[in-house]
Length: 168
Image 1 (cartoon, one colour):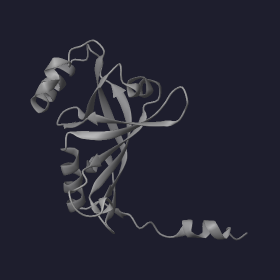
Image 2 (tube, rainbow, N blue to C red; image 1 turned 60 degrees about the vertical axis):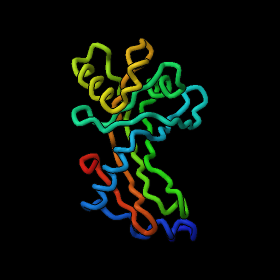
Image 3 (cartoon, rainbow, N blue to C red; image 1 turned 30 degrees about the vertical axis):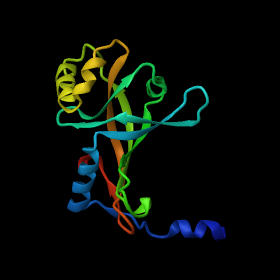
C-alpha cells in the first residue's frame, strides 16, 4: 500500500549529521554560558512550561541546575523528570536563526541533601556563581542533575548535528 502523499517526505534521509570535533567543541562552548532555558511539563495541566535557569557543566557531577522549591519547574521535575534544555545566545546583529544553539533532551534527578557529592557540587557551583551564596543553603533549594539523553546542535544555516551524551 503506498504512503499518503503528506507522509512520503518523511522517508527522506536525515539531513542532520553525526557530531564531529568542531560540533562537539561548539556544543561545549554553549554549555559554558552559565544559563539555559529549561522546558518541563506542568503536572496539573500536562502542558509545557519553560524557565530560564542557572546551568553548569560540572566536571564531576555532569549537567546541573540549582532550583528553588518556589519555582514551578521544581514540582514539575519531581513528578515528571523528562525535560529539555536550550542553550545559546542571539548575537547583536543578524537573523537570530543563524546563531548557534543546542537543544538537549534530559532526565532530571534531584541531588539529596545527604548525598556525599553535594558538598563538592556546592563548592564548584559557588566558584562559578558566587552570588548564590545568599540562597544556596536555604532549605527549599536543591541541585538537579540533568542526565542527557540526546542532543541537537544547530550551528547555523545548513549545519545541524546529532550529539550523544558522550559528545557532551
